[in-house]
Image (cartoon, rainbow, N blue to C red; front, side, top):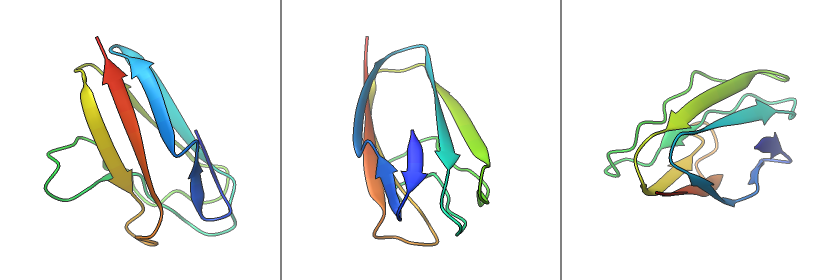
Length: 82
């Protein structure tokens, strides 16, 4: 996953359970990868500066919406299948 131009790319990703997803920030501004409030999701990165990465292994099937806490208009979803 790439963070570029104030967007997560791709905005929707489907992976199998057990897959590790890595986000890389290529923007000059810091961003986070954070589960949407109320979703019960596990994503909670520190602010990622340019070139920084955040990885998470999805073990349970489900839909994981997330956003950037610094720029809340940045939203995306990971769909995890069995």
